[in-house]
Length: 123
Image (cartoon, rainbow, N blue to C red; front, side, top):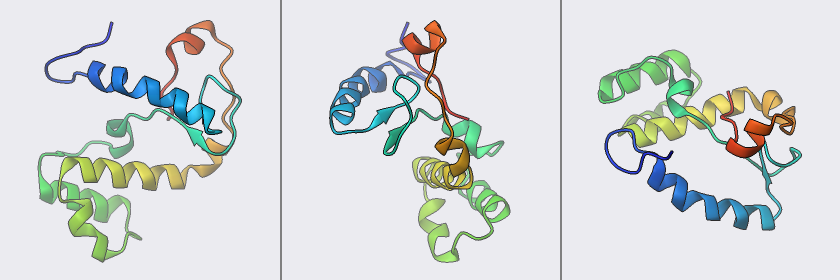
C-alpha cells in the first residue's frame, strides 16, 4: 500500500505520477518494464542507490562525493550540483545513467507477473 504521509512517503508522488505515465506512453515513450524497451524510455530509479553512501544533508559531503566519484564533472557545476539534496540527486542520477547507458539500452520487457503489476526499479 502506498505510504501517503510522513517521512519517506512516496504515495503522493506515485498517485500524481501515474497519470503522467499514460500521457508519456501516448507520446511515444516506452515505460519500462511494462513496454518493450525503446527510446525515449522512462525508468524508475532510486537515487539513494545511485549516490552511494553520503550524508546528503551536508553540502560539504555532497561536494566531496561529486569530486570523488565524478572527477570529470566541470568545477563550474559543483556549486549548483551540491547546493541541495534534490540537485545532488538529479545530477548524480543523470551521471550514473550516462555511465550505464549500455545497460539502459539493453533492458528487456518484464515477463514476471509481479513486475508487470508493480513495476521495477532500474539499477
